[in-house]
Image (cartoon, rainbow, N blue to C red):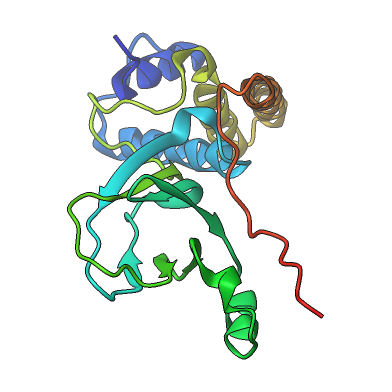
Length: 216
């Protein structure tokens, strides 16, 4: 079974020389806050293979804009009626709309303020015919039974970070530095694995706007 928040709190308590996670609600809340802080910092480094997910939307005839999921971070792939669409920047769209090169606006999309813009607008309505693969932001933990999207093998990073933050505030600088060093070391290991996953095509890189070649 995946490790839970309760498991990490127990591991943190052992590192601090305690027999169990504290019963005091204020202290427990402080430790959960530090674990989430480390969670955010680790996830913020770059999109990770374990944060890949997918969803579908339904097209509406002649509607260009669709709201993306609230946990959306970066797109991997977009398909409409099983056809792959290429990314294009919003600036390029505005520039092309004022030229005769409108052919470049077919089977394209761009994202602005968490909204997906499909070009050209779908001609027909459909059901779950817009397929999106994307990297997501995780939901922060709060309950003892909550789990993490990070593989268990790397979760010691969050314990090390919380350990460092507690010692930092308690002015134990040596222990704090040791905790941060451990956190950074595990993050480096995680980056190596993330790159390996991409190299062996076990993960899909996010799409970025295509390089448009304008007609003379």
